[in-house]
Structure formats: structure tokens, C-alpha cells
Amino acid sequence: MTKKIERLDYPIKTLPNGDTQNLRVFRMRGSAEGPKVYLQASVHGAEVQGNAVIFELMSFFSKHDFKGSITFVPLANPQALHHKSGTFTQGRFNPQTGNNWNRNYTDITECSHFNVEEFIENHKENITTFFKEYIYRSLEQEKVNLSKRGLSEDKGLNIILQELAAPADIMLDLHTGPVATRYLYAAEYAKDKVKDLPFPFTLFIPNEFAGAMDEACFIPWVKLQEEYQRRGEDFQIPIESYTVELGSEEVISMSEAKKDAARILHFFSQRGIIADTDLEDVFLPKTEQIAAKLIDYKTYYAPKGALVEYLAKPGDFIQEGQPLYQLLNFSELNHQDDLEKCLKEVVAEEDCYIINHNPSAVIMEGTGLYQVMRNTFEL
Image (cartoon, rainbow, N blue to C red; front, side, top):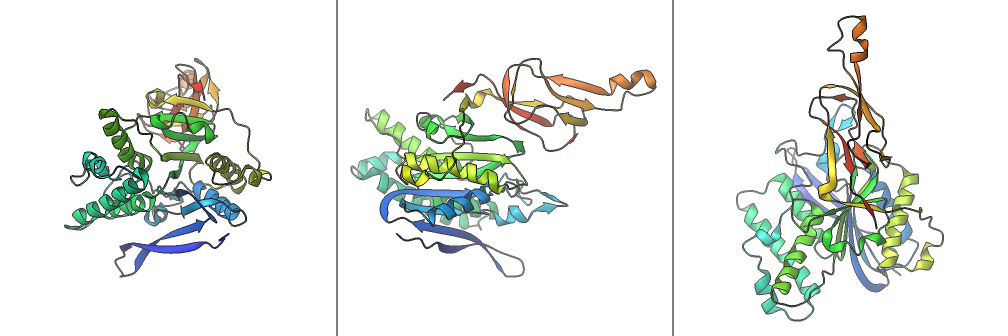
């Protein structure tokens, strides 16, 4: 077995002083052929728990044989990681363009040089292998096209990450929420597969592109499947692509990372990457898996500016009428009898699971406070 970790440094931008900023990529290969896996973390700079999980996975694979190859990209967005304001990491948006780093990937199927009809006509065998190559070449061509007038820094990083992920059979994009539980975004096409990735909550998203990495990876395959179906032929999408939300931003926990890694390792065992016997010393938390469709993922917004106390915690089940949060506001306090007007409790409008809440107690009117799942079901 090859246990060596191979490191590759990818230049992603030149700094004003002439230095080059690099992306660190690590690869490991098993002793037998098998699936290609790609994991990245910290595309949003404050979302760091995924790096602890990558460390745990790399440590595991340095001691156990496996099939296939794994590409790890911790700290996948150095600029976002370095974007600080006081003690807080601001790195969700590019400070120059305002773009969300995870809503700026390329829908390669919308590029003029990408044509699934033509691909099917020219390829009758080894479709998975050739289509991966076709996606990669299309991304390369798009990078050339975009570079004619200079490639924007956020698009430049995003397309490099897409190229790194293009060969993968399994892509996991590791994120966190603000103050959050652990949950997945999974496309509808993968609804029969996602139970093997045993995180507590799953949001099923449409088989559509909205700018995120998981969507950028699966949308070419969705379009290929749709074209086969139009021709009356069956084609099962062979790749899996998920966004994995690992708790709260701005913190890492190595003890929780072991649990997160255990869930991912269980998933890998179900895909034949590792043997079940390799997991004998790995503790897999017992998890009830709750899911909902994206249309039932709702946000509670602040009815006015105030200081807020969050009464419901991420992962909690809250019934209609139970307290969610309370607001402290002194604007209507003119004398002693007005004190009761300063504190207002807000309750849940319906039964729901709490997925995340805002990290700040200082909020403006219209600020998103909670995101919840309603109309849930068990996987």
C-alpha cells in the first residue's frame, strides 16, 4: 500500500508584492483501483471545522489501505481565510466583487462549447470515463475564454477547484453554518443514496444549478441523463456530490471531527473504498436521519432591530407555539410601566427542527435569525 501523502501546490494568484499565493492540495492513493474521491474545506473562510475532519481522514488513511484515490483540499480559499475584521473572519464574500465564494462556480452546461447531444453521438462506451474528461476539457476551454480579458480572482479560484473535482466519483464540499447543527445538502437524484452518509439532517435540493460547488459537479451529469431519457434510454448518474455542513463557523473541535470523520468513513465503506473491518475502532454516532425538501427550509427574520436571546438550539425539535427567541428593545421605555414592553418573546409558527441561527445578539430589522426545517420525514 502507498501511504505517502503527495503534496501539490497550485498557484492561484499573484499578490501586489509579486509573491504567489498557492493552494495546497494533498493526494493519497490506495493499493487497488477504486473510486476517486475529492474533499475540500473552507471555501468560506470562517467555516473551518472541515479542516479538522480532513486531518482525521488523512490520519485514518495513512494507517489503513483503501481502494481508489482521495484528493484533499483543506483551506481551499486562502484569501477568505485571511479576510478578518477584528476577531471575526469575514470570508463568505469576495471583498472586491461582493460575490459569495460558493455561488460563483461555472455551469459548464451553459457554455457554448459544451454539447451533451454531440458527446452521446461520439461516445458509445466507457461513458463515465470519457464524460469526466469532457467536463475537464470544457472547464479548461472556459478558463481560456474567460482569461482573454483577464480572469477575475474569485472566478479564477472557483474554476481551479472545479477542475480538481472533475475526475471525482464522490465530491464532498465541507462547510459550516453560523451557529448550526450538522446537515447535508443532497440533490434529488441522490435521494436513494444519501442515507449511507449518516448525518442528522438532510435538505434535498432540486437537480438544478444555483452557483454552488455541489451543483457545479452534478449538473453536467443531470443534463447527460436528461438527454439519454429524451432518447428513451436509461442512464444512472454515476457520481455523488454533496455539501456537508459541520456545525458552527469560527470554531474547530477535534473530538467532534472524529465523529464527523466516522460518518464519512461509514459512507466510504458503503461505496467499497474501505472494508467494514477497518471501522472496528471507529465510533459511529447513532443518528436518526431527518430530511426535508429545500422548499420547506424556512427563515425567521427579525421583526425589528433589537438585542436577541436565542432560546432554541440547533438540532432542537420545536412545536408550534413554543418560544424561539426573545427581543430586548428600549425604544418604547418612557417610564416604569413601560418595562414590560422592552422584552418580547417570539414563538414558532409551526412544528420544525432548528438547523441554525444567527451568531450575533445585535440584530437589525429584517435580519435572518433562524433557519428551520418543516414538513420533515425520516430517511
